[in-house]
Length: 106
Length: 120
Image 1 (cartoon, rainbow over the protein chains, first blue to last red):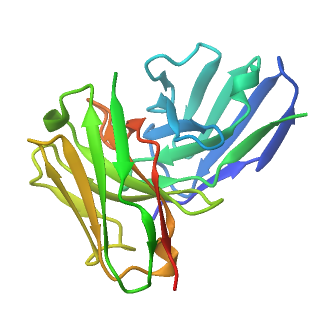
Image 2 (image 1 turned 45 degrees about the vertical axis):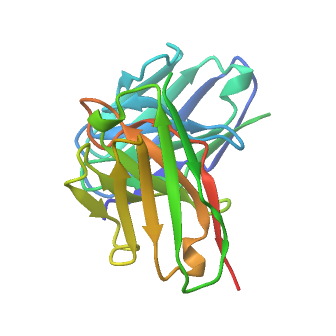
Image 3 (image 1 turned 30 degrees about the vertical axis):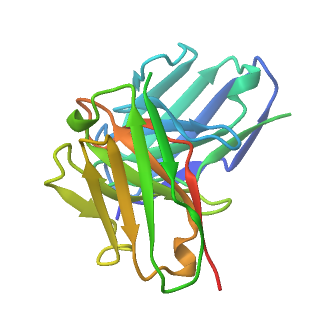
């Protein structure tokens, strides 16, 4: 099973700041990685797939990078609605999700 | 607009069964592979099962294999998950999720979820 580790567990930032979230896989997943946003009480929303492709309707402030085993989600300029939990997900070997990074208001 | 609505959750005793439904609208349901994904309270996400667009191909997570069955009725635009021999660790919000067209095993639309609680 591919284990995904996300860091930090919690990120405390102010609106307008840049957020950098990390996802590391226990083995290479090539570029087969996605990022999801989950706001409290809501279902997850696909943000990024294949490591760097924005999903339909996702604002340009969200960007993804990386390949192999190390990936980054960057939010350039946090909006109030961006404070949420972010999960990475790999599809290289079945499907597993990371434990999540909570982006909270500082 | 894509819409997925789960139902059928509730409180059930260990060892018993429950069937969840997912009603789809706003897209060509019969053309899409659909998944079930669950989230235990205050926990992360766990993939559960997948069914191909025509219902002929199904896969399950090891944790539910031989206990859960996924099936669909394309004439009614509805997905199902029949859960047998339920355990406490099956307690979770269960989401149905549409697989992204042209990008297997990514999930581009999710329902709001239905809560299953396994408890005596």
